[in-house]
Structure formats: C-alpha cells, structure tokens
Amino acid sequence: MLVSEILAIKGKVLYTIGPNRALGEAVAVMNDQDVGSLVVFDHGVMTGILTFREVLRGVHSGGSQWAELPVAQVMIREPLTASANMEMDELRRLMVDHHQRYLPVMDGTTLLGVVSFHDVAKAVLEEQSFENRMLKNYIRNWPADDEQG
Image 1 (cartoon, rainbow, N blue to C red):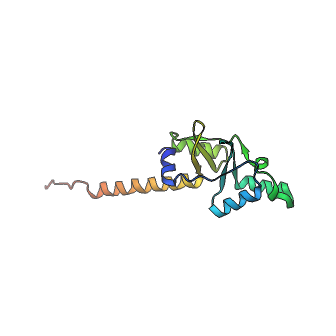
Image 2 (cartoon, helix red, strand yellow):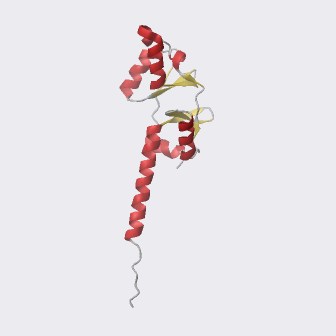
C-alpha cells in the first residue's frame, strides 16, 4: 500500500497555522478540530509542524505564559516528510525510527496531507480485512473434489 492510498482512505483535510500565532490559539484549533498536529505555513511555504508533543514542551517551558508563546518557538522545523509514492512499510519504519507520530506528505513543495500513526494503523486494518474477505471467498468457492473412488 502506498502513502497516497492512505491519504485517500483518510481524506485530505488539512489544518494549518502561521508561525507567529500564539500557542494557545494552536491548542484551540487542535482541540476544536480533534487533530494531533498542525502544519505551520509562512507565506505559502511549510516551515514546520506542531504536534501535541511540542505543545506539551511549550506548556512546560512557558510556565504560566505558555499560551502566548509563538508557534515558531515550539514547532518542529524542517520536519521529516513522506512522499505519495512511498510504500507503507517504509513509512512505518521512518515513523518508528524517528519517533514521529505525524508526517507531512509532500510532492515537491506542495503539501498533500498529513499521515498519522493512527492513519497507518487504520489502513493496515482495512487492508487486512479486505485480504481476509478475499481469502474466505476464495476458500468458499474452492472447486469440489469430483473424484469418486
């Protein structure tokens, strides 16, 4: 399965934020949209990604003023990315090796979407379910042994 197929299953809704926006605003968007990451864009160019892990670091380091911290101060700059034609196994390895739960999917400089480890797990389940149905159908329709002895 390719990353593009995972995006097709997930859908391509994207949530973004500017680097100069307040961390408190980012938390509100993440909460309202029930997402674990926001892609950070500055003048039409992806400059980073903000996940709940960076939010927690910002809350910890910012103390009582955490909500006013600019997103740029806590985001991951130049995040790892995936390509649409990447195989799912390669994607999983990249995410596991680098402890990344969210990866932007890029086509050159164009953001196609964000895949999460949850999206990958869901795609694996759907793929296995499909294969399971196909195998059961194949077994059910197996030719009967016509030999009589």
